Length: 319
Image (tube, rainbow, N blue to C red; front, top):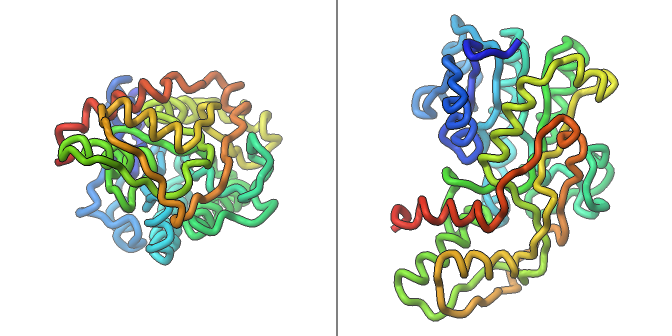
């Protein structure tokens, strides 16, 4: 049973989600949070992973390590998004099997669902249609991770829970204007424009798509909550099938409205221009999170509040 002395391996502890989980575990005074630097162990390399963990005990594992990015990054680095993520996932899931880890949290993504899914998107919609082309390699990698989790769950009774978060944002994000996700990319663009007194900010796409966002601190709460849920409760809920849980805020916003919000928060006074020659991706994507809500979790941070917190922390560090 999970307790404050349990040994928890947190992969990706310096990333967007992993950083939030690490902070939350420390706040809760968990004493044995195991982390590794990327420079020390490349999680894509099975031999290095096996060697490093050979004599180490692990009770629980949170798989927050991944290669991720926005639409342009997904388009420009399809091979890396596919191979890096499948290699990391395979190595960590097989480590869970070898070490007989008590519970592993696999972090997927809402992009695993078909492009034209009925919204709100339910977990059952997985593999029922074509994927969005702009990030399909990342989606395929995550689906492969779910399927390996399912195989290990069924064959070895390995306790794995797959969480499918909506678009996350937070402090440890990649604030790259080209390769970053929409919120951090916008934050940096607006802060740069304000700093250098630009007359306009140019954003990719039409601004029409609707997106759901979740603050990384809220996602961290969900992860730790599910880490401690009793196994029998999940088995009963999912009828002995692999548990897959959507994690969303339940609120949609258009990219145009989001840009206006970030414009207000950053204090930029110029014009917002959308360049529609760039792809939009899926038009509308929001998740049905009823299952995880029934387990006692819900998002607590309003989008305006969350973005304001991020801007306050990073505005003097980006330039």
